[in-house]
Length: 159
Image (cartoon, rainbow, N blue to C red):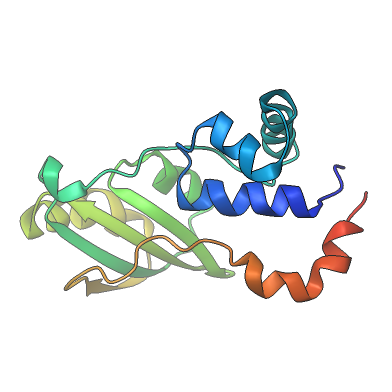
């Protein structure tokens, strides 16, 4: 497993803020040439420190105006795989043995009701809907400023 150093932490911090940062700018910040910076990014991806790079879209621009968190109780064995296949399910977390928290996006409340009746209800024992009134913070980034206190442990991560 790759050893994390301060340059990796700086690189990850910058990419969390803006994954479109130019390689030349990253290299200048890290005081490296572009080739080793590119290699670091590829290795951080390969080792799983960085999961992926993606565009974050404004769901409302695409007509998805209804959003709700749903707490679900189910014993369906394939529930997680089924939910992962639905484009309406933005996030899905297993909370305990048979409890899940889902974030569902639909065009409107009527479409949400249809999703519940046709797709969710047949798989669950119980559920509770928490409609989202407004988004306050949608994406968090790992704060490496707090981690600097633990940087000695980070540097020594080895498998």
